Image (cartoon, rainbow, N blue to C red):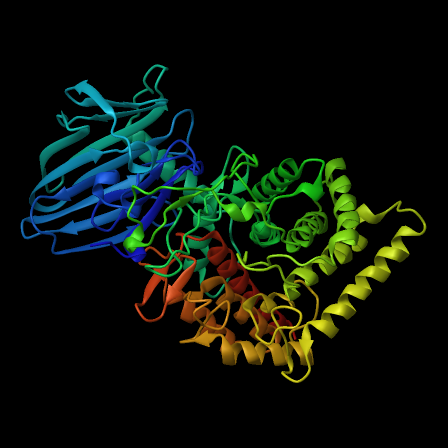
Length: 589
């Protein structure tokens, strides 16, 4: 039976990540990067597609899963009739090679246990050649090599490595897996005790830099830790999620690869990092964006690989059955070729946020701002695919048009607009004001009393909740008040927000980031109690280790979509910080 997403914890080394289940199995692992092919792909198929399990031989009675406080070290307690064991999983912050360590500790009784490392490379399709003896096993496939070391005797057979041992109370068994290039020497051995201490220290020192008093400190800190786990430290890029093809709706085909960096997330990410005191990470994200965009903003893609490269060509993997039998399983993402006007506003808004925070401006940043402003001047009238990456016809989406206004407005506020030609500033100011007027005329339906998702439409969509956040209109404006009220009427179910009205065309569950956006709008209207209720409703669907996916299905009461989702955790941070600012303003008044 497929485990629900709530049954997994994320571990990682800020270059790649793994999902470890509440039953003690690693079901998803890509090496050496987030966007590399998976060598454990059981999450999207079966155990035959690659897993690394540590499980008691007797029937499992119950299990619990958590993180060590303020770390990305996962602890899974497995209880049987014979006793209980704890599996501690972590990835040391990488020095040279990726390393994944699994420690098995005895909590009670004598528990016969089996470790099985059945890695299957190329997304679960290719078993390795395995060799070794004693406590060392080496697995090869093409360019990839994995070395597994343990004090337990390792058995080799069927392209897998196993060990059988008894875990007694107080005893400890370590399994250390290192990855390297097949044509190079084996990665060096790693001392598990030293690695555990260093990993714990690194995460606690990192999260210790956050010291803002907030109403939900545990949830916010866990979201920050999750975001850091999704940042590719060598480049500074933030992947949208650690997984691919986890469906928005079980059994449907809305399965996308989210292991890439979206420009859509630019401002959300910068603001969260800067507001929480992580300037170095904010600078790294800004610099990643500048490198990805390079010197031709008119050729910007909506997403890139973690190193900023452009090729995310889509493909399907027919040998994988899909999570909960949702096919096809996809890698790559065809949406990279879409036109989405909002990214121009998001990039300039990100650069403007850096400027407001006092970060040093760069010559490239100035060039990009000016080039984007010139490009928006030509392209803002075009239809696009919108924030939600519609696979249907292009439309004049309200949020997309608003973000072209943001691009010009932020540009004109910043120093990048200095030294413009005498006639350029008045022209851009006039265009900015014209876009505002067009959106308010064509995007607002006076009969409905609200903005609509696109010009000429009659339905709202949840992207409209971002209009106050980007400064287009305050939440207290009569037009926004009508829009928020209609969203609460048409898009809210069970206290959570859908992106679109639910229909055959839009069968998804509730979109968790949108629920936090609603909370911010409610705060903007002075509705603190409603905002708190919305925030707590979303916190109530977190997994046991406090992780959020993209969506939540009200009928099955399950998390859906790629997991964990950066945008959901970014939205949580923004909403909780907005609540803290609201309360601080009230106390000051």
